[in-house]
Length: 341
Length: 256
Image (tube, rainbow over all chains, first blue to last red; front, side, top):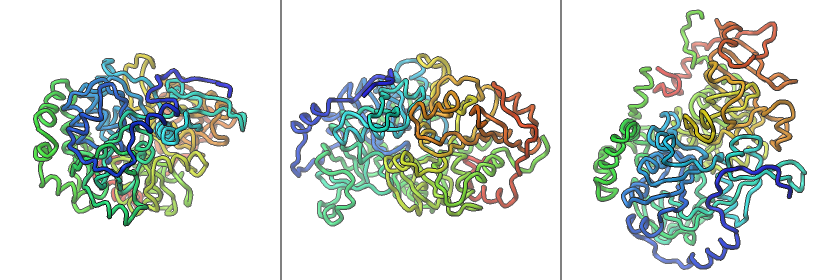
């Protein structure tokens, strides 16, 4: 195949598929073993300084925020973040100094809530480096290639743009049509962390609502931590096997963390905590405010349960459940300000 | 401008909604594109198939979602699937309209949502492509909704995030993008634009009520192709405005 163009972005998370097959054979277990552990233990065992890390969910939806706070609490450093619609997760991780490089499909924004003060400031200062650009589908298909165990995935996006020129993709002449086609490299993250509605102690997981990229990402990553709203019996999995999105053999650790996506949404269970997100957006405008946020909500608590008490406890969580199910109106301070303009 | 009883945002949403045809599919981004698609579904296009990038397919969206991935995007949907599924549908040719917002645009409809300044040392970092490049690459017709001024309408953008007509006629095909598609309309607070068939450069199609051709030119960093006679868009009707309040009761995108 003739190479027509090569993006100058840094290639991260790629392995020769044969090397990755060998890694899987040596490191992954196909035995049904109990993988339940604590968040502290899961993060300290499977997230290492310098890892290429990706999170499940999308934007502020179904994100394992509990594990993100734990990563910050354990002072992980030099992570390379997959910025696949990374929003609150990326903002707070970059803000806390855990991330030194990011490949960006979407980051530094909070969709309708505006741009991210913290991560933008840190990236513009050069303390976290954007090493490559890509699009959402481009990232999705990097994981698809990883899951398939092939070196790349051909696709028809990115072509002709600066996004391609700053990506790690290549353009080649397609041997079938003779037309230019984009090849996105496989991505095998060192570790992926996803939050699910329920799973059994082995890691067989069910997700309600859209699965976004979790199907492919969980199979492409070398290590997978699943945090879950609840742990269910294996029999529940076996009585509805068509509902399993993530199979146990790709999962390395299972941690039960009710409300583990807070302040992000968990479809059908609880809505975005817009008041908390607004507090983060306000405080993170300055380095001092950012530190105050982390001191209060991350370093100042022993774990996620204490954090939940601090953000409003059961009263707040019940309210978020009501909003998610259309029984109460959303309270959003950023919206009030926007409307006044 | 004449005194109006509607806002610019309401006008944009109504003009955009009218472009969407019944029983066609539309890939919809955050904010105004969502409002426009929901309005189309509640007026002339009840059979509009709305598709969201996180996997929501064919929802009957109850109130304006905050994100293209939240649970409102698959409320009473025909499927809650995955990003792979909907992006694949786009690449395969299933998506008629792509609906995007943009920070900066050039005469060929190329969009920048990545950065301002030198790409290697940007002055301002913006969010990046998100699904933008994919929508601009895959959908048959891309509609852009954005604010127009001379800083946003530029002869060259600092970074081409999402492909428009690239450098002109035939350029998309040369680059390997799917044939026969590309940017279709640009809607701003001043008017509606299309692309000249011969040059693929931006061309004025209609002005909003009270806006002059001169204003469209003053608010652009490049020359806009302008025909001798330019029609005027119709202002929002009271019924359309009522529906917009129903769709966005908190005024998230439409204002209060």
